Length: 280
Ligand SMILES: [Zn+2]
Image (cartoon, rainbow, N blue to C red; front, side, top):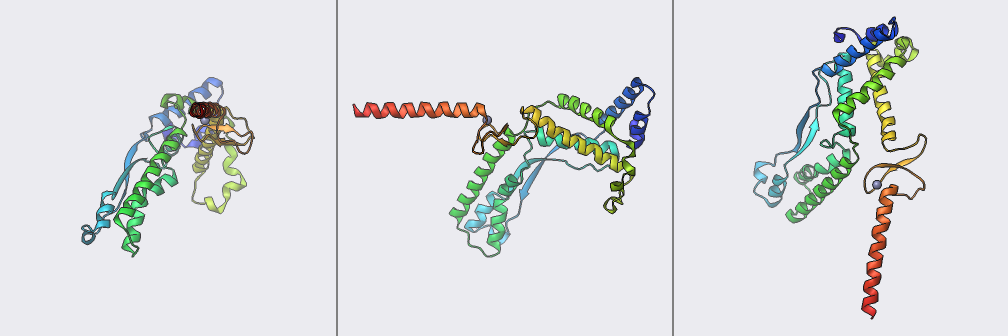
């Protein structure tokens, strides 16, 4: 079982293997250990919660705040309680899937700040700010509507890939990483930076693998959207895909721009026809 070895031992074994078959076997048991690791990807319900003080519950603003004192959203377990290489790399793999592909989880900072609106306003009110029930209610509903719209945009920004296909992609990346990994990584001067004093040799390799996974997924995202390297790109304001920027003012990908132009043209024609009919 690979998990009984340190990561650097597996890398050394891989690089010193006597045949490609032996390398293959080492790599596959490395992957098996990752996939069989108990750290499954788990979602959970989180909430922005606060309790309206009992003596304020009967007041107008108190009742408004109480209505929005428990706003739930979907979160995920982002940290592994275990610190062995297998659990840590598997956690990274899980987190990257959640970040790029799982539409259920939206953890955009702005989104969470908007969900936090009732709580923020409540504490401002208890600190002495005025709170008119109707205005407060309207402010909260406005913020939550904004949050909902932002959530949809963030969901559109996620790419589509099944977990099984993702596993295949990850194995390709891990194979490249394993091949390119230099076993002397721990002997490099930067490895002795005082910042990393608490880390053992294995942690340097774990960090290396996690960085490679992150970098390669960013590259893969460019491929997914058909972007070339070293070009500037932006998110389309309609479909949220990434597109290559041809002019600074460009707001939409070419597909959405075509749809947008068509819609505009139809609308103009309709207005023109209406105006013409009115003038007859
Ligand atoms: Zn678009």
